[in-house]
Length: 102
Image (cartoon, rainbow, N blue to C red; front, side, top):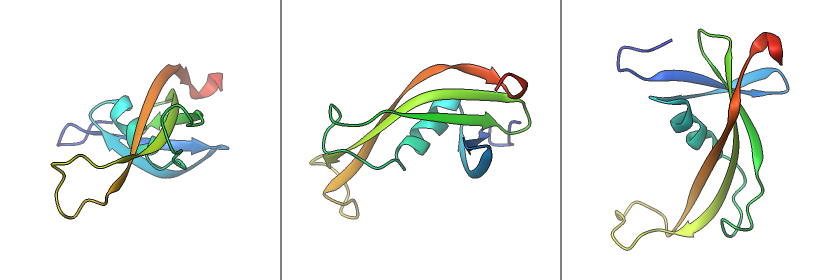
């Protein structure tokens, strides 16, 4: 279901529960937000990949991603409020399923 600002809401599914909701213009944008909450590794190569299932609110579509997170130094031109170590994340789409298929 699309909000007035054009963003869509996606619920993170874990063992059938949907406790966290992430919003974004695309499912990938919401998946990146969810991936940043994963336990970060010391580098991208060392990061463990985790399956992320995001159900688009108002539909039966479940977007499935593989996500991973790592810590990195903040860029030189970062604002003063940003910490020196930041969490980066990436995702790879695995497909779409419908709730009755799960």
